[in-house]
Image (cartoon, rainbow, N blue to C red):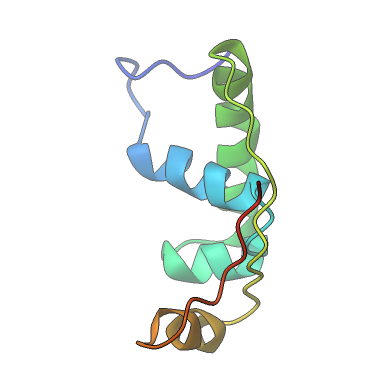
Length: 88
């Protein structure tokens, strides 16, 4: 059974963390730092949300950007040239 938005315990951050994780843009450890939680909590969130995404037909292509540390994200968000390649 998967989480439903109206069920207690459902959080939008779980969907966002799962999407970022499934796009392979960040490791669970980094997502844990960004969401002020642990890698295990990110893993559980992905386990909860993945069936919801599958049932609704969401297919996430892998990102061409890879982030391993908070500094990687800061460099990516810094003003300047486009740093991500299109997936299409």
